[in-house]
Image (tube, rainbow, N blue to C red; front, side, top):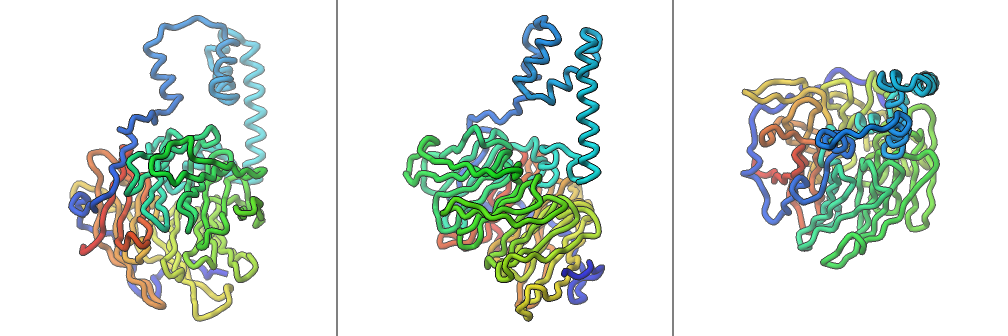
Length: 465
């Protein structure tokens, strides 16, 4: 079991604070990186419902019956939107019978939701709101960029947009491949398969889209092949992670209390079953020995391969884990929660071979909101990103628009964290997703990739700072 949360820092060291000096991203821009701006690439990333509302203001009104209008909304937007329309005051005035039936149906559905919420508190929210609250991407519902994923072994980056399309950028291809399919809705996560240049797993509303992308230099969407992975009650998928060797794909769903391990080469899956809260986040350790599993509640688990997938259960005092990341050596796990402006560290004692050896959880950085000049920094954290060299840590926040950068020093049994700089966006842009470029034979630098709310991606080279 994990030890109780400590109020002091690890080994008695003082808790780190937020940085107070700014870094200007343009002065640290690496060369030969693609220009990525989803807002200017010719694709429509607008919300279809908002577009319908906007177009309504310029079209001439057409008189139609209440029933016809409700049926039209049903076929366009689904049952819930049709029911909402049927329970409006306008419907009550024009067709009291339809209003009474719809109101009764609405009350029955509300009662059923109430019963479910008493059994499982995380079911109080709708699927899309649950996803928006638990994904690592800030403002996921409205953000132009929903996820960014670097390939672990080569210069290739996948960028998922709100239009349910994925663009693939590299340092060679002159044409950007676009991956799109009718099954690919509500993209929440992506993961490239290690040691395979062209396989990408995409977590979405109804399951997992497993893409095999053509190796041709000039490729189009039709030349890429997609296999859809689906399992009963395992959707929407909120997290996907490959193991270090690329043999197993782990997936988590907000409706499934267990985890699925997909054996892709054999096309079958194994379930790691547990009860109570469903899963919300997966992070595989770099050495492949442990799978971190956060839930929609205050429980998280550590699944050990060497222990025949027997989990170690840990519990937060309050809230749920919002984001987590492993150190490159797999010795430390950093995480943030939904309720506290604090960065925590879980220390794995490698002196003991047993996976059940005592582990210490302690705060290592105070992220309480501060003001530096005209900029606001800190508050409730949103996401973590730790560079593969173990030198830098980046943190984004839910309500403030700056990225906090820390320097990290990894020794055999000790982690040292120091405030470095903060990074601000251009104009009113705020960071929605962050990740570091993978370390491979073509890259040994620490390059932070930032997806901004305006739809553009910034690359910042962190060196000699």
